[in-house]
Image 1 (cartoon, rainbow, N blue to C red):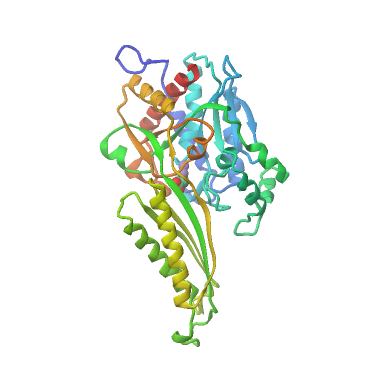
Image 2: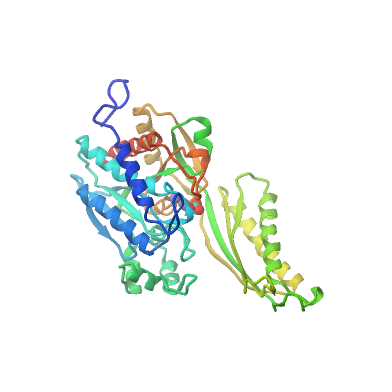
Length: 428
Ligand code: GLV
Ligand code: MN
Ligand code: MN
Ligand code: MN
């Protein structure tokens, strides 16, 4: 498939933008919060319905569908040289509480439309093409981000932590998986690991989740690197007590320790002096959570990211020191300071970047090379394959909120660039 002579894409290479939008809207209806928000948490009933929906489309497209032990879903279009490493694409359909319809979803449904487009235009792959729907890119339920792709990347420690983690209702990962139809023996977790030669390339289509493309009026972003994310959980414990009877000098308030640490996170992030350092306390819980009870326990979850790994790690060390200091000054116990993940950044592979640039040029679409400040399953696919990402603009850069939006035209451009990128990589 290629554009015709300078007049834009040929008629045969047309995205079914309406069909894609209809699928996005249908998938958004599998939600545990009211529209326009979307909430779809790992292994919930809605997640299971979404999985069924995606497998249905894969089957309709004639793809060979397979699921691994944790529910990563693969739809393969076998190439003429099926023994070669495949060209992979895909993203996630889980959605954090009260988020939008497009994060991840565009990279799954859009990839399936890209496959459909290639089929309609008569393309014959040499390397197989494969769409992957990754399990739990979002850390919502078990605190582990990119759970499916992290495991695919062969991280041994994760097979241990997955045996022990529980959600906030005390349901274990293994029980939750079983209730979604993925009954497994802990030994099976290693079967998710990918061989290093499974994929010759991996490319993910995603909304930018930032404002740059829209602001600059550029339809395509070609991602050259993904920033380094880290997450930390912290707990303070104090004596609690009656909000009226315990006088101020006698208190050791775990809630105030948490508040002070949240402000310290902001301070240490700003001290880095770089606009690329960001830190967020997105979860702050107080126990027992009553207006007339001094918090006896607090729980914080802290997200720190940077494109510079060392600078990110320096912030984490400062936060650790602050947590210790605050606990001393306030007479509370720092009962937990746990780094959940502290991932390095990832660079895109030259072969994939070249193919994405080739595709954008063929399609006469202006593009910009950029970094991804959000993380994606591509961060971990980069460990087993050359990786690349295609970004499309989204309204005001909104993401992780209900107003997230990408236009059908922008999605169509992204699907076309993805299709042509995969076609090119398939013939390499
Ligand atoms: C993924 O959703 C992220 O937080 O970057
Ligand atoms: Mn997300
Ligand atoms: Mn995403
Ligand atoms: Mn993400």
